[in-house]
Image (cartoon, rainbow, N blue to C red; front, side, top):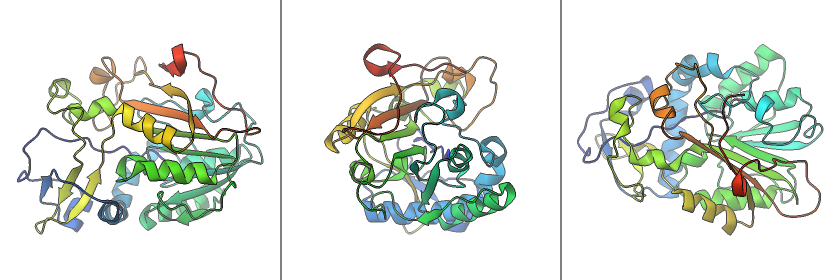
Length: 316
């Protein structure tokens, strides 16, 4: 599922008012704080936020995401074209895990290709929309409510795993997620996940000209958090540098085979949050990490097509 996070606004916003959505009204969002947010607080905030925002999110983005399409990112890179999880047919009969599935449109796409997919999400609100999409399409995906940092699956039971902007940007300890994914993967199995490109953290959350000027340090790992009047975190997003992401992957025992940076498609005029034609023409908005658990066997994975596995994908 494509859950695009909101990068930080310019600095010194502790008392800045946050206007907005139903989720903000329901949760009493009143400002922005830059402070440490641990795993338990982060998980509680994300569960509450996505439960509250689920209806609005699907109303705004459901038409683009579809019920059974697999879109990796706002640049509209689709799995049916990119095949980052393996060649067509490679997942038939395979047990696949989607981490942060939301309404599970990506899972449903793979189920249509014969995979045995399980969708996991922290939010009951998002899973409710997944069940509704099951009913609309006639394709029921097994769903589990759970935390990405503590996957409720046995060791060595998954043939492939993926996440399209689900969970990873919102967890305080992404290294724990990498370890958990490595634990449940079978030897040779791929793990592919998409996140907002780390370099975007340094820029304001603005798709226009104001979003082209650096406003804070790329190396500032202080989370972006929205809070209520009592200082309780109601939304949080965590930053990792590109090096941090690679370190988390390697420390878990996984191998990074390829890094994909999708280019903005020619002729695409749509704006999604911070993603826009203006910014997309100048620097990447998405990073997709194609990893694998070492070992014999496993389904066919991606093949690096750029130097040292670094690939810039244009529109299909």
